[in-house]
Length: 261
Image (cartoon, rainbow, N blue to C red; front, top):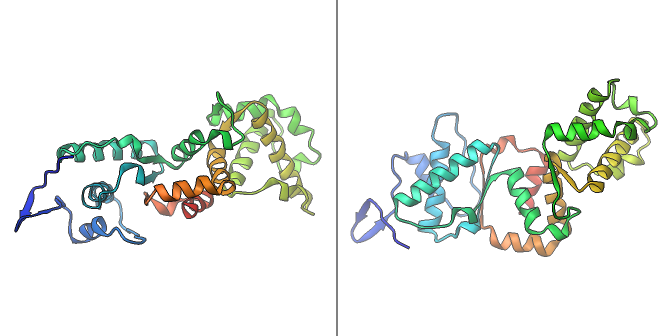
């Protein structure tokens, strides 16, 4: 591995911080313990994040597979990959960026699932549902939901397509809050128990046809790690640095995943 730095003093090779200001340099080089960076739009958060990753690799000898970076959009993830790659290439450093856990929360969780598929309910050749696919699956099976006594207490629409939309919205939100529908089923409030039955029917649909929707990716990954201590310990040992872009936007399940890791 060859290193090239622009700043050399007294025989020591120093890290090139580029145009980073004092606060950014502190954020880049602070690598022990938790770190919170608060900054507004246009203040160089991505620049700082890229430099920090390069700093970890070049100064701390951290391997790519020991780093996890979660973003909230595919666009942000692709920009990070491009900028990190360019930065490393500019320093004549050759690493496999694909070994890094970098992407949206959903893509990272999907990678966890794929790497340990046999420990999940998912089987090979599973079908991945986007938001339209998810609603269409519910629409096709709306009769199973309409058979739930008191459905109108949780779903107010009457048309099949609109009912499917409401059902998807309901199960997605509850999955993101890590709600166990078994607890809802036995609740004394009828509306809540109806919600539990809706989630139960929907969960059964996914299992029957080996499907995975966008919202349940994170839930499947969470329970994979929670129910398999050996897999969790393996990831905890491997991933030494976790960086979350736009941390204030994390929902409950995403934060719990971070705490687990």
